[in-house]
Each structure stands twice: as structure tokens, then as C-alpha cells.
Image: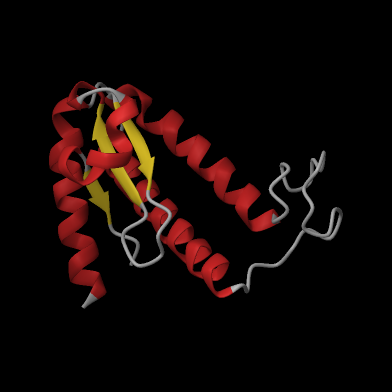
Length: 135
């Protein structure tokens, strides 16, 4: 069931990104976005359930800890680095990422820059952007 949903979502994302491509691999961007969505969704579930492992260096405090990028959780630091790389990958497409942190929904939305100001993303992300399948 999820494979079909993921494939359909990949086709929709590729259709959105293809006209914006300027020598950049659309398939790489779509695959990387879906991978980031899977990891982000899983981490949101772990955070909600209280099963996210704390940093061994700062014991979840995060204050000044470089190991966990001051998050208190190494897993969230890895996720943040991945999302930074995804932002860099999507820069040529002129698309921004909206992170929806609720584990019950799809975690990432790709929003075209011309869809409006970033300040409105919190209230209108699902109307202006395209969700990325986390399955």
C-alpha cells in the first residue's frame, strides 16, 4: 500500500520540480526529499512517544553541546543536518521546505517561492505546497 502511495507522490513532486530544473537531477531531489520525510516523521513519532534517545554528552540538556547541535538529541541533530542538505539541494528549484511537526500528518511540504511570503507558511502550507510522503 505505501509503495504505491510513495510512487504516486514521487511522480507529483517530479512534475512540480521538473519545469524548475536547471541542470539539476529531479529524481535525486525527489528521492532525497522522501528520505528526509521518512526520517523526520519517525523522529516526530519517537519524540511524541518519549522514546528519543538523549545525548550522552549533555544528557538531554543541549546547552552548548556541539555533539547534538544544542538539541539534546543526536538523532535530531542528524535530522537537522539532513534538512539543511535538502534545502541546499532544492535551492536551484526555488522551492522552500515547511516542516510540519505533528506525527499524525506528512512532515514536509515543498512550497514554491512564488506562492507567497514565508511568514504565511504556518497557516497555509497545505494550500500552497505539496506534501512529501514519509512512507
